[in-house]
Image (cartoon, rainbow, N blue to C red; front, side, top):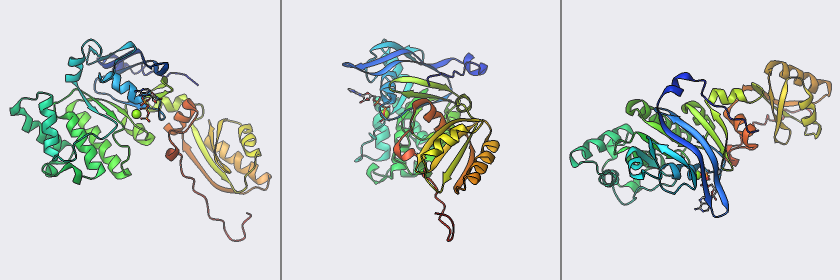
Length: 346
Ligand SMILES: Nc1ncnc2c1ncn2[C@@H]1O[C@H](COP(=O)(O)OP(=O)(O)OP(=O)(O)O)[C@@H](O)[C@H]1O
Ligand SMILES: [Mg+2]
């Protein structure tokens, strides 16, 4: 369960200069090793996703790469500078959005940005232009005079993103930029990040708990678990690395201890995950054949199927494959249960 897929075959990316290089990096808190020797490289212009369950070490990795905490051993180069030896040069090259919201509620949108621009020594004559540009980029220009406490959660996140960009960094670190936002605001933030990447030629390292977003927007994804990198590749490579190319999701009307064994015994089936009572995700290398056989099996046992769907392997499946669990409790897909028809078998 610990294969590492690399994107080295992707010739174009491999030849591009690296924005971030992390080598055998370790972070120890007393006896506890939060990060245990992680290696990866992020190419210039890439959106690189860091995925992992709570406590995996994502924020710790970001804090080391952004010079906020010292590295215990190994090294990280950001924009070519060693985070331990050249912290100031690293800081000038990067923008950071920490996991917690940190903009000052009592200041206006513009004041929050202005303070940061000064902190980063943006020359006075450039400040106003930069502030207008980043506010435009995150679609907050008309809110520039608004007090931050009057903004919605999504707008506040956008303000934080604008603030991280006000000194024109080349590399942008974002720790869970969309957590806590409703689905519409999440999509808006990711679209904005995608535009920023294109228009500002930014490299981005983003952590997220949302698989579909990572799938759509990250060029490559690293999955970390217990401080270790367990998989690395493009979303397509990661999905291909999981045995089985389709997922059949089935719900049996009657729960039975036997379903797991019966499903595993079907030809082409590579894995079976129990979702909830009577509901299974069946990974298979032949979705249509497995579906047919599954229906025939249920019919021969005189069992009813409540619902059935065939999908391609998702990043959720990749995540479960490499970490052995769902990303977060709320990430567990809700199951659609067909209403029982009058006269149907219970
Ligand atoms: N200052 C600290 N002292 C001791 N342990 C720490 C400290 N900071 C983090 N840890 C531990 O290191 C591990 C990794 O934490 P980290 O915050 O990096 O996880 P994460 O992947 O960002 O999780 P989440 O998804 O919840 O944000 C956790 O077990 C955490 O308790
Ligand atoms: Mg974190």
